[in-house]
Length: 228
Image (cartoon, rainbow, N blue to C red):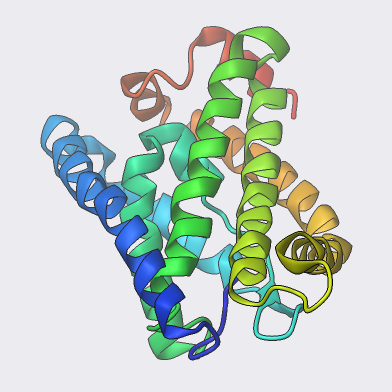
């Protein structure tokens, strides 16, 4: 993640565009609804987009044809839900491909699916499950961290499907890609979880009304975030 321009065979380019498209279309509808129902959320939407753009631009060379970096999508997924973040991810990935030569147009569908769909869905589910069990801070940390790891597991699957090993096939290829990603991505994801916690701490103190509107925070969350 991101898989570079021209790296995937055409069949997989088409496949990942087709798989990602319904999620993005639904995300556009959901984003319009969020803006319509909560116009005060526009600055926070901008923060979520900027956070994803900056963190996912910090690339480290990794598997051939790809790179390793934080994703930054966990924050937006927790606040606005994974559908909205799928649209933001398309915009982020498109700008990075055009302006930074990071990722590509042919691989936009695949990169969107891993970073903008699977990662945010996992982050959202983890947050919802852990929020009432482990507390606000742990839920935020786990959501951002596991959402990041889910992105890279998905990318490893995508690369393994496109380039199965001559001996051992898809599974052998997946283990090879995932093993190399893990060297950089395990610590990077943990760092992303901590940074996301700090961002929530700052913004909860600055704009608590927006978080309450999206049922992310309450009085207990505010008190817990202050202890980060």
